[in-house]
Image (cartoon, rainbow, N blue to C red; front, top):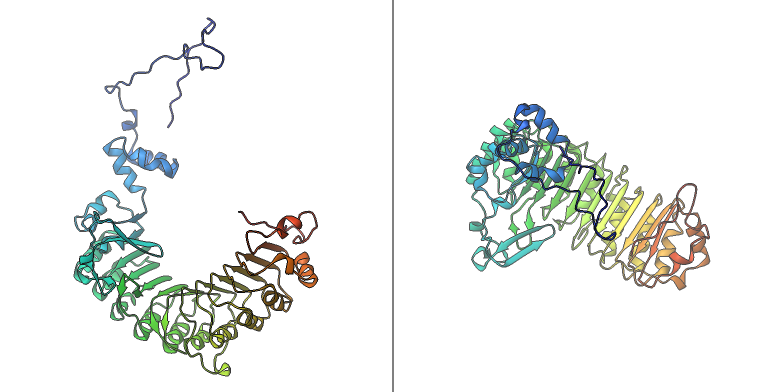
Length: 456
């Protein structure tokens, strides 16, 4: 609600200079705390409906008006990240936010001194540390909440939030996860940090689980192990998985095969910093509905992929994303492209070792429609040309920050390809002038799609 106060009209001319605001027509407004609170006449349901229509950016300030509004604001909050574990064990979180459907407990499960000036960051996670909480480069066990304490909190959460849809926790065991499975039938997304194989038996009863993220061995943070045993337990218990992300997990062909055979609805698989044994790539052929494969920060693709004729192929795969991976090994890169030979989109960002001879293996994939390259400084225009000219269905090309690719080396054949693309983003280095030189030529425009220039 907004109150508008209009000044009374005045017939006397203003004496203020034209360049300054006329303040003579404004009257001071005094707030009377004894005035009646007309919002008290509204029921909680009606006032809650009004507050829910306001922008989310105003919710916090509205909650400071009075205790009643603070209580109603808590009923509008559905997602929360908890930083203090006592907020859960004391029960305050349930009173303050009774309708949560998305609860993140990851930071609260790490007992770190907030006063420490040392912050360790890994990807999207940061924690305060000191020398007493680090052991052999990882968080010491005393820095993490004991599993029984985490399980106790999960039991409380299961009893208070039966409509929970997403949960993230660190160090949970089978007991706590079993309680979540029993009391939260609507849970669809689960993120587990620093858990072992046996803990995954607890999620077998979560029948509607669709998205799972498992964090095993993560440098400077966790030193836990998730192997084929855990992957098999996960596959057998969560058959409706649609999206799976494995970070720092071990495993092999058997674990990936079990996931493919049991989780027939799986559409997206992400492996970050994986520690898989050689031969795991062949297990992807059992993922009959997989559409997207992402590899992030992997030191190797597959150390020993085996013979080409035994790899198989993932026929439904549409997108292949590699980010921050080391792809110097030609054998593993060839195996990857053989498994993903039907892929439509190839995205390679900040990959180490992507030289011309390695990139030439991408010509194995004949149905590529989109290629995105960024931060691939070893690739030359010659290596790029040999591959993209072999793709007869290519429609979109994005080349960013590939400093070894020069505008002056663009051949007439490559320029002809540029002219028929539906989308062309070309900025291989900071001195690239091709984007501006193509203006008005019609290159990079087809139908109702136009040439797109990247932002500086």
